Image (cartoon, rainbow, N blue to C red; front, top):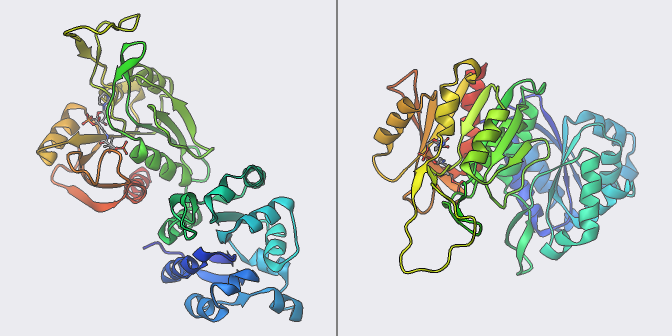
Amino acid sequence: MKDLTTKKILFVICGGVSAYKSLETIRLFKKNNAEIKTILTKSAKEFVTPLSIASLSQGKVYDDLFNVENETEMDHIALSRWADVIVVAPATANTISKLSQGSSEDLASTVILASNKQVFLAPAMNVRMWEHPSTKDNLKNLKSFGYKFIGPVTGDMACGEYGEGKMSDPYDIFNEISIFLSSQFKNKKIKALVTAGPTNEYIDPVRFITNKSSGKQGYEIAKSLSRRGFNTTLISGPTSLKIDEDIKLIKVETAEEMFKATQKNLPTDIAVFSAAVADYKINKKSKDKIKKQENLNINLEQNIDILNYVSNHNSMRPKLVIGFAAETSDLDKNAISKLRNKNCDWIVANDVSKKNIGFESNYNEVTIHYKNTPNKKEKLSLKKKSEISEEIVDRIVNQIN
Ligand code: PMT
């Protein structure tokens, strides 16, 4: 539950199959006490009715006809000034194109053009439309105007195709906007460092030892921190993930590189170590590709423990050091012993033997243990990694304050 009392949200609903999801999005905002007004584009009315929106939002619903008939009550400048934030969901390819051109041919585009508020767009369209170079150009344009995007996500589409272009879940839209609205750390003076993803430890120039970390959990933590206003640096092992532009991303491959990048980015106020760093590296990496042979022995030696180093680096120890523990048995016991041995303030334990959480999955379930309150443990039940991250960052915000 987020308290959005006094927050004013102007919704713009465009004409697309996912317009029905806006009803749920509006319901979430209303449940959290936000004040809502809505603009329906002409084609949006083919998918949702003004009456259903008005009933759910308990606020006014505007359309182009209303504008023509009653310009004084529906002054587009006043409406854009009224809002704390404008949310366009779904944002169709057509509306994205109009906004990119600075068009003012209907009420929605006119209000947005006249606005001095943060505009969020939740795109929804067919994968080919999303991937089309003209849409990409429009996105670049809108980003350069400072508009922010939520999604789209990848999945099955209403048209029967599969790919990127689906509108984000109502909860994710609600979450992103409410974080923006209640963000307390706008000044970006508090530094946060996050490690994420796997490391590759090379045997020869083309082969390496790695693990199944996708980086998802760490990237979500970095995103949550950045959205709350923390000045965030993400040190990432090899992943295919993308990250928001306002996060400083440092890409590394080996544990040694991750260590050096971490050292370079100290001091920091907060450090979260979610990377699955290889405990071992190859003792003597072969210069050339190793030829096929009957038996091959590889000697391993320990990598430096980055978390341990930072936790015990007295002069530059962050105010808050958070480790992760990836366990396959005795979750609590092993996590608590890592909390002690690595001298971190909190440890976030997850059971990586379960297929639906931990490595690669979009979901996780974690238990947090605290150094200063050894009897306290908090379980965050199964949910999306983005939600787990939000809950961890909620705790970070409380601790830092
Ligand atoms: O990336 P995803 O697919 O989203 O999966 C998420 C995750 C399972 C990788 C993540 O939730 C997680 O558990 N990360 C920690 C993985 C890990 O390596 O745990 P560990 O128990 O081996 O290490 C304990 C802590 O020491 C971790 O904070 C780790 O980052 C740190 N460490 C370990 C070894 C080392 N050489 N340097 C370190 O800093």
